[in-house]
Length: 154
Image 1 (tube, rainbow, N blue to C red):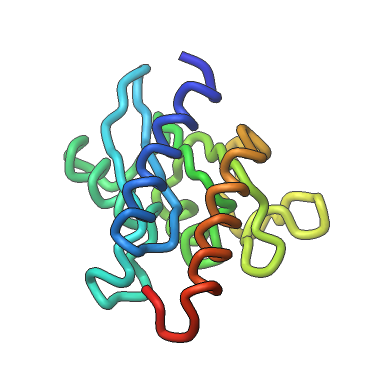
Image 2: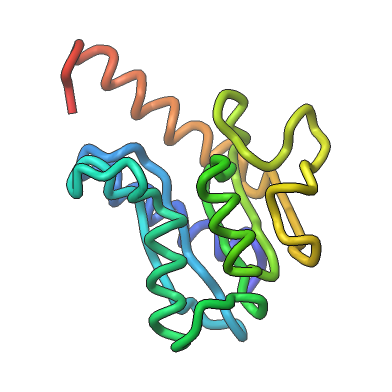
């Protein structure tokens, strides 16, 4: 499978998040050509601001593998990880991070178009912009619908 194929799987997770009223960010982790973790944002449901898709996926993948290091894995996530998730990715030593849409306000990886070496492990490969338009459109649609509903809408 290609990066695009895997990102479509992450987009499926993001759509599930949207159906639950969560910000539509989805993530999967792949090891040896197999999806070993699928996750989406759960911040609203768990009332936990750290329950981002990436964090959920890291926990699931580590449990599956029986260890905390994910150096042989690839994280696919629909939105550029925030500094918290980038920091967690550093500690997992994830082999690759592939994201869809840039997060110009809160992204933690591609400041001003160049990689910030301090947030990811030095051996982690970074790929951005995979199915970027699809990922960005899902987020834009979600927030547009939320604005129409008014303040406090879930």
